[in-house]
Length: 278
Picture 1 (cartoon, rainbow, N blue to C red):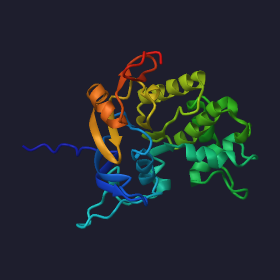
Picture 2 (cartoon, rainbow, N blue to C red; picture 1 turned 90 degrees about the horizontal axis):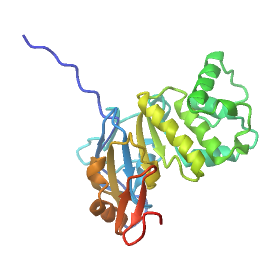
Picture 3 (cartoon, rainbow, N blue to C red; picture 1 turned 30 degrees about the horizontal axis):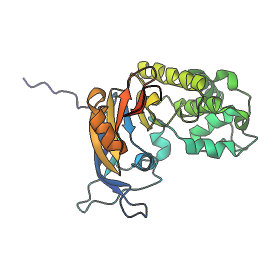
Picture 4 (tube, rainbow, N blue to C red; picture 1 turned 180 degrees about the vertical axis):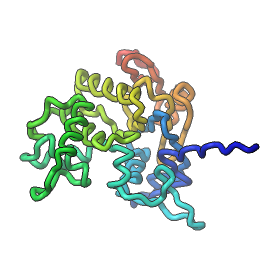
């Protein structure tokens, strides 16, 4: 008797020889093959200009990959090669600095409206929109989950960088997504705000939310991140478990300098020839 086994879930994100041209002499992404499974916390790590931002813009459909001659898709999200950004945000929450810049330019925008705007993929609800009690409750629950419930009623433009990051995280969480795509989430935060945010991300990871962290900051590599992809000049240098990827040889090749990781709390990159405290 043959027992049918349930099909394996599709990867969260899959790139098949994905290339992107952005007007420069070399591709921003150059034939990248990448498979990020559901449930595995992954960091995509590399220096400025390595292709990290291009990767995020592929997912948000701000950029599109070059077409393959045989018609096969270069990018899939949860097994789909055609997706609506509004629909994908219900399964993959996205936190980027670009969103903060847009929101901070609107001085009369309240915190709860920032979160409510996620329901229709807008910066905020339109004045004529009727916001249901259910959506308000979801927004408050998301703020609480991001440790930002106390910010309700504040104007977003008046928030500190750390407070604003909590609101952006709540906006990404309002649909209760299975995963979060985070673009340098602790950039610009002071040491206290950074610690608070990273503790929140660790808690979310333990609650079952898959983390995909795009960064060049070692201190953002929380212990739950078990897999690392290293990028340099649009190409993958390494795609391996954390302990195998974060070694001096591969880090040095990735960043173009003799680099090693000091795995403390938080971790830190150190250039060879300098002290661990430098």
